[in-house]
Length: 68
Image (cartoon, rainbow, N blue to C red):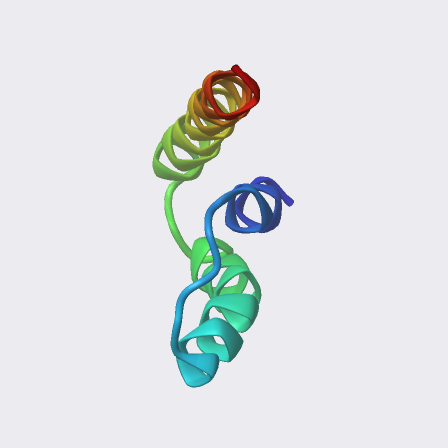
């Protein structure tokens, strides 16, 4: 879920094929993470949440700068 949210907050890739690949990437990683150690999965989730917060903050600052 965190990977999907992070992907939606990021700017879209210019190539349509790359956009489709990025859309299915969270599903592929979910399957991979099923077999990984729990610590690695926890690290990945926390990193994604922090990246979401960072991207949200960047979007807010850029929107404010564009309005001014």
